[in-house]
View 1 (spheres, rainbow, N blue to C red):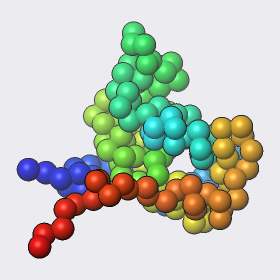
View 2 (cartoon, rainbow, N blue to C red):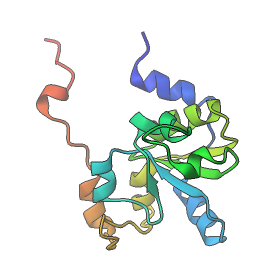
View 3 (cartoon, one colour):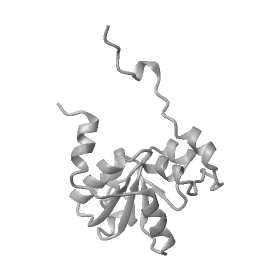
View 4 (cartoon, rainbow, N blue to C red):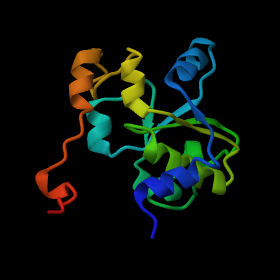
Amino acid sequence: MKLYTDLVADALTRVREIQPWDLRNLLASGREPVLLDVREPSEFAILRIPGSINVPRGILEQSCEWDYDETMPLLASSRELDIVVICRSGYRSALAADVMQQMGFTSVVSLKTGVRGWNDLEQPLENAASDPVDADTAEGLLVSRLRPEQRKPKVS
């Protein structure tokens, strides 16, 4: 049986990651990759990298193909787009980038450390109203919110 972390580790054998400073430098150079945030809409609404688009991980495959309710024409129309896949910490984005590569996307990378790493580098973040969110506020919004029942039982 594979665990979530095993699936991510396996995907990372095939997926190229970039660091937050690589993305900062890429954007500063004038290149405009598609910033594809695969977090859930509620996460995306709270905090996001400016200019990013949201396609939740759960509908990614359909969003990349024509003739589905979730089709995103930008993705369905070109497998050659430069795409940086983003999530909170870099795990979901690695899985998503792996699937996209399997679907024929030729220039897709995962943002290592995700929005959390982007915030640690004190790069711009915004909320749903496109208002800037400062790094300290963002840090609080990015904290894991595990409920007690979601934690692994302790063995006595």
